[in-house]
Picture 1: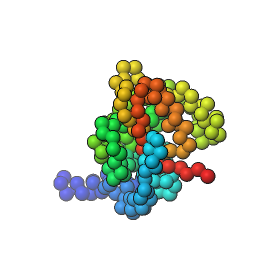
Picture 2: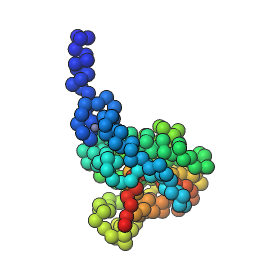
Picture 3: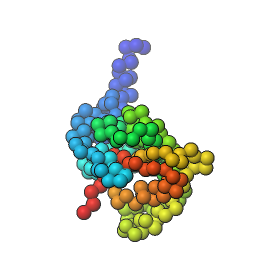
Picture 4: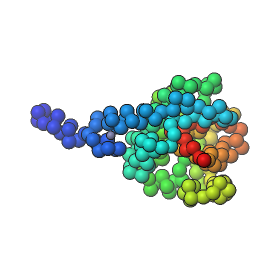
Length: 214
Ligand SMILES: [Zn+2]
């Protein structure tokens, strides 16, 4: 039997989710090289809260996120989280004892997709940085796809969309919010409401991709 194992491994080897070449890593070396070239050299915007973005929402990064979310490749979310963790470690904030909170999906949406990409990004991120994952934030309102809406409607669509789990223990804690894409900040601002009401200090936002709007 032993002689067949390499052959079996060859056939079981998953293909690169971006180009379909066989690979033993999450992405093949060609796609990984392409993705790595899109990493921002200056990923942190010193706003309050600060925004840390691994890359711009374009090119291979955009395709990687789409493959993750719409073609059932959850491993890509975890991998993007590890990359985001590297950017964090290269640009560490002066705060310690931070918790990482992923932007949740509505349970119906999560059931449909099978996973929450932001949670997977947060898990990869936490694995790389040693920061603790916290999942006290819940999405209680199913919202329409945001990209079809203008800024005012986005805000309206998102009001009261988020709440905190009962019995959460995050009062007074410093946290960062983690998501896949930062566009207008409407989702982040809606998710921030229940956290701020509970006296949580949001020090930053960490995302895999930032969409530059004109
Ligand atoms: Zn590839």
